[in-house]
Image (cartoon, rainbow, N blue to C red):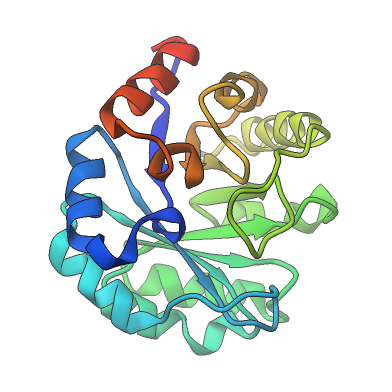
Length: 220
């Protein structure tokens, strides 16, 4: 099987010890650092902006996976890239000119991803799939950490993987929301190759042990 990448979401870390948390989770085996950006409009929560991404970039040695859960992401994509984002993911529901935004991200030498909320149909990917580097399936309704994985997303992940295979392109499939050691395998079995874990890592006592357990569960 292809390697599964682990992307801890700092939304759930201890921000009073941000530098230590990032260094600890990287040492524990993280592949990416996932950063959830929320604006209080597209989702009912407000998190962080480019300044924090810039600070994280000075600490992290792993690529920064920046997930823009914001309205009008095209307005801010360049700012997050300038701050240090290596992957920028925008929501199909939030961008009226998705092709243009993806083109801007890629023109700046970064990977472009698109994300779908749980109730958004996969038909939204029909044309943009030819342009993106990653697809992110939300397995909870975005806005807050610690939610329960929506079981119906198993089929959606599976169908997304089939779309990727039919496209003939090499596209990462990331799943974000409610992923923990006990259900990581179901997302991977459905076709995911990048798992975002927030509370599933940062609310455990031993990050290394948790990541090792996830890898064991998914068959690595």
